[in-house]
Image 1 (cartoon, helix red, strand yellow):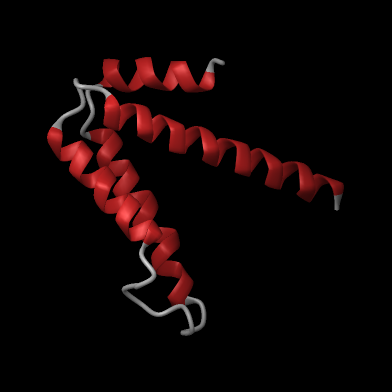
Image 2 (cartoon, rainbow, N blue to C red):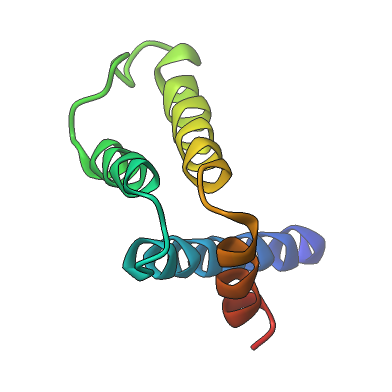
Length: 95
């Protein structure tokens, strides 16, 4: 049980750091407009009470959240120049 507790804390801490990374990337003037648009879409999707597939449908209802958000974040990060991404990444994860 202790191992699970530590693992969940690490996941929670990493999630907070990735949210901060997305915030920094969005605020950075060197981030392309398409990346900012994708970040807005991901944020809207995460906060929206409306799902593409309702959560009451077993398994598939939650699967859309688990798949769509990481794909959107991946696309946003891939559209940011590597040097801009690394600079912001280091600012968040090296502290």
